[in-house]
Length: 125
Image (cartoon, rainbow, N blue to C red; front, side, top):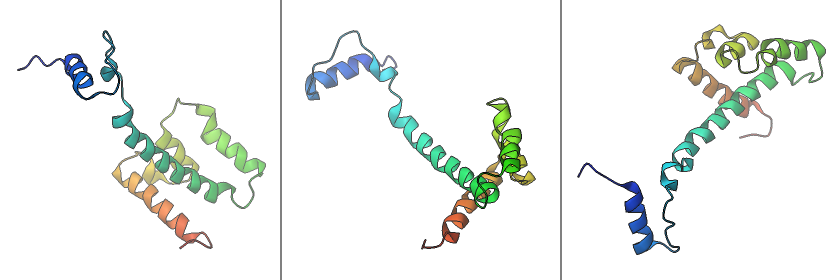
């Protein structure tokens, strides 16, 4: 049948398999996004961590309180808030024009950074 009712199906599951009773009038299944969104969110966290690691190593690791470097970071990243394409900002900051478009090549490059950064850390395997 093309008339699938997810709320009725969920209520039946609660009646036959649930530990607690179904609450009539609710449709939480239409608003629950944790399972399908979590993987992408976690991946983007790791991806952003790789970019942050590269920024740290390229700009701040030797002199984290350098005024000129901090001003450069402010000028190239912070001043735009969310108003400029992040790939363009990062490519400018890191002097990596090949990353400007944020395409598959840029993403692969970020993946290589993290691998190289982790391997180059003394004491890492």
